[in-house]
Length: 325
Image 1 (spheres, one colour):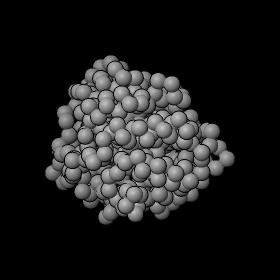
Image 2 (cartoon, rainbow, N blue to C red):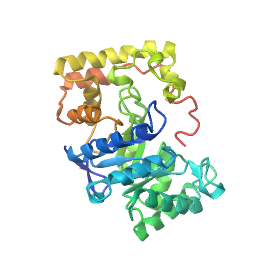
Image 3 (cartoon, rainbow, N blue to C red):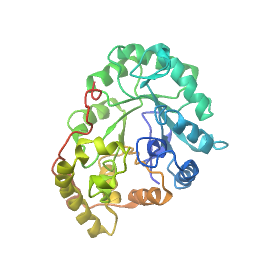
Image 4 (cartoon, rainbow, N blue to C red):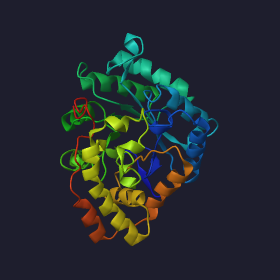
């Protein structure tokens, strides 16, 4: 696995990470096979995928606990990223945005305990709290860096103006936002700003929530409780139109004897060595398939064709208001 540096002076990570959300939350089958999730994490480490992404809201709490169990006795093999800010510990552990310094403190102590570690490598604010100035949140995060409880911090789905304000208080290590062949918005403003500031970009859902694998042809394939059933891009009419993107990815995959997932990830990796996608999976075989993208080199013509794909039909979320602020 090729490696990149996390931030300007952070640890080296495999340029493909592993998103752990689906093991414990939001997708059909989540929480039903923790031992399978642990096996997937262990196999990831064997393959050089050492950048592991979780959050306290995944479960909630169950995903951090699972990662803590998986890393027992091998903490130094992994670079842990987790997230706070969507559970209000200051109000009795209810769901809601809270970037207050008091909530930062309560959140990090809980995550450290569940993860079974004395430090978190990358600590993201999961969503921006409009009631708390970002300068106040980052001030609390900077204190945690000084105390050694976190090695660096990141922001998820933040506006460029917010990132700049945060970076002025204490350098941002990484920014996480959805980015893939069917979510290209970051290319316009976000990615240039991150490169200017020396911040690593961590795309989540790099396979379009599984859509770019070519395995989802109808919303009827999604089980009740799978949050994609309420996602605008998976609505019946939109999904039927979006399948044209998958056909183009499949065409390139046939040319290079790879899977559509590998092609989608290889395209993303070709966008720069400051990008670390975190495709998620619960299954070892899917992990191994994704890792195959690390060695896949697409031709300039293939990259150009993929880069020219039409935009998908539908928003990324049913409610876009918590994003880009």
